[in-house]
Image (cartoon, rainbow, N blue to C red; front, side, top):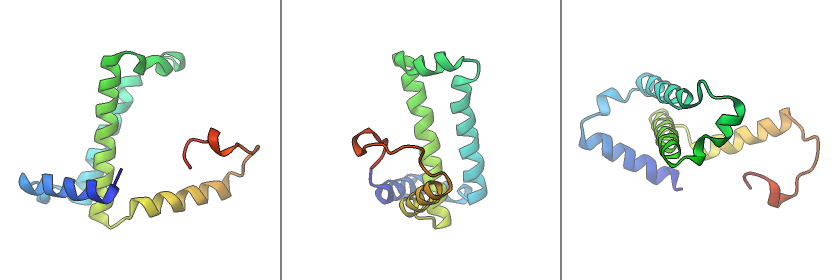
Length: 115
């Protein structure tokens, strides 16, 4: 995923609809929280076991995908409008987390989530 290209696409999308006045950081942060709440709502009354199986159903997976995309899109817009380089922020935060939470065991590279 090319984050900067996606942010340009989101800027163009908003500009074509004259939405820029509404894309203040405060508004984007609020919209992000609304979308995060909609994501949470999908899992609200499920047991942990049911939540693991939620995306096994195609309809649920589509709804989940839509909400995850909404959260990501608003997050990318918020970063764009506040001058935060998402890729650099993620790298820096992962390093902080690694220092704060040292590993209990070594995981081979092919078993990790992101490399």
